[in-house]
Length: 130
Image (spheres, rainbow, N blue to C red):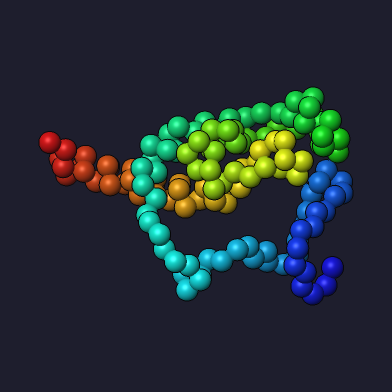
């Protein structure tokens, strides 16, 4: 594929992997393209409601993605848990039956949660808690 393309497309191959030799640019990061609405509030509390875990794909997943290795180990989160606190980070998959997490959309939340932790640590260091 050479040049530009607009629209939906999918790549299928060995194990469903996609390899790029150049940069991949996604969405709009430039602040000049954004109308800021609000800061992310209670990020730490929301992140604490999520569980990260190790897993392997079950039989249904292998049925849907036969090129995948049933014994391969992954790390991830539950789309259902994420959807409860960050619905904008979850989308329906290709068949609209299963959910998938857009992990990149969790990064700003994690940044804010780290900042909340830093504020708490600073208050503890200075005796800022009554």
